Length: 235
Image: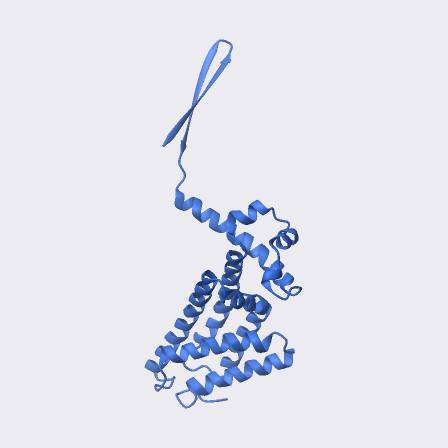
């Protein structure tokens, strides 16, 4: 659709007519721009909400007004991107989980000849990536118990992580460096959800020394469950 705007300018007896054509913007382009703006809002609110969670016993107790005040954000801006607090926690949780999963992927990207120390280092990096978001992930889990939207998104994101682990196990079994008596999907499910629960319940209040010990213990679980005696030599 084109719109014609005519400007009648009279100067020294001359009439000038200017025609400006406007083309309707592509809806897909507009949606991409909105998605980018929303992502910036989420990135802005993530550290604010995580800090406020240190002061509240439950996400239910954290009011939208408090978030807006701390974030110096207008109510209209907030509700132009989020339906409610549950919608916000979905966005924040997905952002945090994406960061965590991207780091954790380094465990499954290790080559066939990776050493036990390399497995340990990858696990420690994953644990440290999870640590800043522990309270937020606990809230996501809390809200998922009574909000179907949150539960579906939470489970979908971790199912993605589980599929990545299963692909690694299948590839390792085919290449001969992962034991063949494991069902890839079942093993990946155990590792994914064991890690999620362990990091949420064990890591948050642990000292640095204990965090390192927890990471080393989980690395040992992975090592002896997947690799030991299958072409990787324990070191």
